Each structure stands twice: as C-alpha cells, then as structure tokens.
Length: 563
Image 1: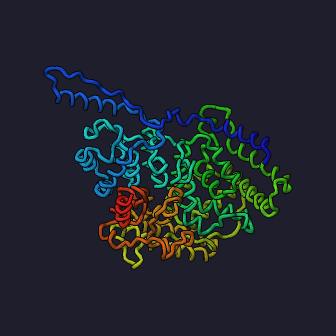
Image 2 (image 1 turned 90 degrees about the vertical axis):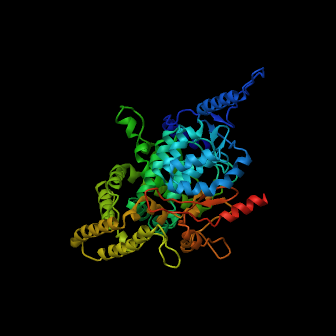
Image 3 (image 1 turned 135 degrees about the horizontal axis):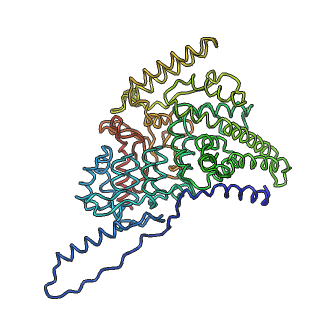
C-alpha cells in the first residue's frame, strides 16, 4: 500500500480513537527515592524513639506511592530469590484466598520476598492474580491493613517477565479481577516488553488472541478463510460459533478491556489489514458498542462518526489498492488473490456486525444457558432479519466437544468431580443435539425446547461444572497462551496430547498428575515464579477447591541452585 493511502486512513482511525479513556499516567523507570533522614546524636539520644519515627515516616512514604507506570521491574534480584523460598507456603494461602492467613504470613516474614521500595512487588501481585485470589488482591491493592505498614501493590508496575498484572488477568479471563484492577488504577494501555514475552501486546491483545484458541473455533474453522470454498459460509459459521454460551466469558473479558483501551479502531484495523479474520470477528462482536460509539453519539448528542463507517471505508480503500497492486511490490499472484479474499471476508464481517451486532450481543448476554440448537436457530433468525442469508445446517458439520480434562486413567480429579461430570454430560447433550437435527422442521422447535429443559436440568445438577471456570478450563488450551510463547519450560496437562497444535511428544516435559492430585491440585499452569513458569488455576474461588501441578517445584529450586 502506498504511504498516502496509509496516512489517509490512519489519521481517521487515530482521530476517532482518541477518547481519553485512560487518564495520563506518569511513566518512570523506578520509584522516586525519598531523602535520607538525618538525626543528630546528642545527650539523651533515644534510639527507640528514632525507630518509631522512622517507622512512621516509612508508612507515610509508602501510603504516598503513586500507581505510576514503572518499567522495568525495580525489585532487586535478591527479592525475587527470597520469593522463591516462600512461594510454596504462599500458594496454599492463595488457593484458599484467605486474607487473614495472608496478612499473618506477610507480617511473620516481614514482607521479605513480597515487598521492595515500600511497595508490594509486581511479582507478588502477579502471583496473587494468577490464583484469582480476589480478596487477597483487594487487600494488597488497597494497602489499608496495618500488617502491610502502609504498603500497597502498584498494578502498573511491570513484572520481571515483561508484562503487567492486567495481562495476567486477561489471560485468566477473570472479569472480576480485571474490574478490581481497573478500579485501583490499572491501565489497559500498557504493553509487554522484553525478550521473555512477545513484545508490544496490550491486555486486549492477550484476551483476543487467547479467545481465538477456543476449541470450538479451532475445531470448526480453518486458520485462513481464503482456503475455504465459500467465504460467506465461513463468516456465518464464525458468527454462530461466537454466539454460543461457552464463548460468553471470553467475549465479556474482551468487552471490558476494550472499554478502557485507547485507539480501539486502530487495533481493530491492524487485525483486518493483517488478514486475521477470527481475531477481527472476536473484537468486532465483543466491542461493537465501543466501535459504534453509542455512548457518545446517542446520549450526548455528539456528531462523532460511527466506527463501523470508518472501518468500512478503510476496507474499501484497501480493496481498491489491492486491485491496483498488479505485482508492483513483487507480490505473487496467489498471495494477492489470498489478500483480496481476506479483505472480502473482512468487509462481510464488518457489514454483518454493524447491522446485527446489537441484537447478537443482546442475545448472548440474555442466554448464557441455552442449547446449541437453539443458539444456531436464533442467530440465523437475527441474521435473516438483518438481510443476511446463512445457508446450510451448521449442526450437521460442526464439532462442539470440550477438552477431556479428566486424568488419563479415567478417574475424576479430586475437587473437580462436578466439572468432569459436566464434561461427560456435555458429550451426552451434544449427541442429543445431533439427533435433534435429524427431525423435520415442524418438530425442531419442540425438540429444541425439550432439549433446553434437559440441558438446564443437567447443568443445575452438576452445579459448578458449567461456571466460567469450567468453560475456561475445558475450552482454552492455556499451554498455548500468547503470554507463554517464549517460555523455556512448559508444563502440559495429560489432555494436551489430544491437541494436534501443541505438538506434544514423549521428548517434551510431561507432568504426572498423580502426586499433585494427591495434594489436591488441578492442571492449569500459570506464569513464572523464578527462572521458569509455574502452574496455577484458572478456577474461581467459589468452586470446588483446586490445586496446582507442583512437579515444577523441583525444577525451580534446581535452577535457583545452578544460577
């Protein structure tokens, strides 16, 4: 594309995206150092009084610490080393999310390994967020507990691995944690930095990219829609899949982050221009309200342009530029045709969401427990009402199976019985849905109603099995998370062997769950504690107690000794 064309659309995107969603936050490379106090030693010098005054001074300074963006992590290496010595004990506390135990532990160890420069370290806060320990996170973000001596955690301090806690919460798809972090000043516009992670990722990018790893999407869509015989069918299938209840928690996370992300249209256009149709669809549907500009144009009477109009204009210009390319940049004809197809897919996708997005979003929010058959029927109805004509019966060709999170020996993991029951019941329900598609159109609605009743009964029976935690664990291959791409050591659960994209073989590290299950652990790995990543849950705290694969502990300690 020519530079004139790029400048033309980019200026419009930037102008539309400047919403000042994020107040200006100071960026520093370290916390400001307070002046060193001086005391004159005279007759009758009271050392205890001096210590009392010093403590009062430190508490006052700690309370005054602003949540500035800090890059790089200012915590010294010895603090990280000390954290390795305490993380096992801290893990048990965070699994329970016990504020009382956390504060007692912090006080007993005098904050060693968890505090530096009169603040709670980014590594500690990342660890807390990785367990989705909401109560403990709230306590350290507020910093009001006496045991913390005025210290609090800064959500805008980068950790030693090159990302921020909001990236961690985005990878967890923890809406409640994201809300908590945002309330305490976390910026949604911070980006990853360094060699240990893919650089320049926003928290929004983490949520979008990881959502595209959802098993429903990977099992039913080609990575490149230009290889599909009919790109219209591809787009319609993609939209139907995104409206399924198992996608809701993922879209909710993206929607929340999009509300706080600056230059949202530019981020969307980057996906479209790069031919990333699934990422574009995920962001379009989840953030359609922000893109549309409803909040400003309808409520405040603003003349602000509709973001969909700007994006459609950019796609039109892009299409025109492609048709006039003619190999001027040495582009192979096959690649040029592929880019044209991707551009056509993007145009149809934007057109569909711009017209049907509000109705689709309202349906998703109002129907978190509904059969797949009913979803496909209703979504098709919405699309037809908006002038689009999806063809074919998706239920005939679609594969809607979760990962089998059970142990390889078939026994249910301790503490996860309900979730595993839900997996088995899900298979039964999916089989029932396939049977529903064989009946005539006259009986389809009745069968769908009966199936919905059956689905609700099963989900009520299994309780927590259909909560967002189950959804994330059963459909998101966390071992391929975008934040873990450059991690030198990865821990795979047993069911990752059924994932062809993981390329897990016998030469790679496999963690036996036998010991961790005996200790009450689950199989969801998380991020680094020391030189390598550790494991932790995606589950929420109101679910049957989960634990974590602890087999990596020995590796951490060994690496610590060797370094």
